[in-house]
Length: 156
Image (cartoon, rainbow, N blue to C red; front, side, top):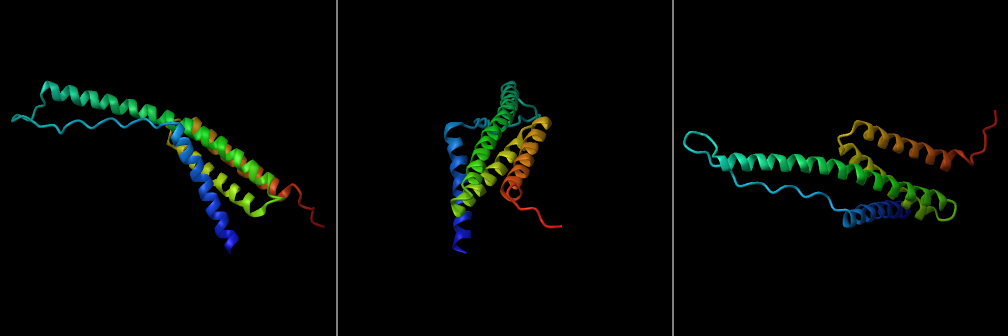
């Protein structure tokens, strides 16, 4: 039971380490500042200043949205690469250090899930498909490497 708890803890800490580490060195775009509340005149019309402030805020929100989608796409790539490296290390150590390799593998899985989630946040259907395809390929490849590659064939 202690090994399972340690494996889960290590997987979570490894994933947090990567996620927080990436956020330290790759800043997310800043959300635009919200303008002062609009005060309608007696006729319910906006003044020219208020209309311009609203247009400026709308343009800033649109730019933020574009920047955030690009950030999500780039972050997804970085996280997926980090996850692949962790998964390779975890599988590579599996025959020597069971508990550590399982924790690193689990951290890689958590990081991959986070990377796929950020990839889904980008507004590019092709990129979403690529990210999910990479996740599927990694899952199948690691499953084959860990469980099938050295398995002895069953007697017929």
